[in-house]
Image (cartoon, rainbow, N blue to C red):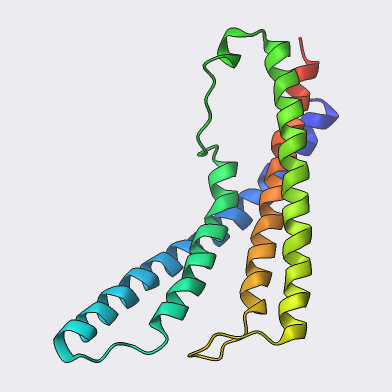
Length: 169
């Protein structure tokens, strides 16, 4: 086993449980979001008593649900990929295309993470909060930044895989 294969293997072993836990948190947020929506609609229609702040809570849960599932989906290779053209190329050419797209994806992910971290400080400094619950926004930006960082690690693993594929015969 080459050094690159050992790095890929150890990164996978480290990231699989972390991404599974993050995904599980996202699933719990999804279930809570569905329950809250059902209760809010029922209360609104049956008793004309909507749950105050439910819209804001659902927005927060959407951040958790969407962002926390991203790394797990990527580590399980669940994202959509179209290999209509690349499947006809040689193994080495597919690896080279993977290296290029992997670098671009990793660069975009790093910039996204960096800007999400910057946004945390902007929100915290400006003391922005929701209008009904008066809940601060920066903790949810921090959750998003954390999930972006997890996703970048998975993109790094995929880049290493493309690198291995592009350099093997």
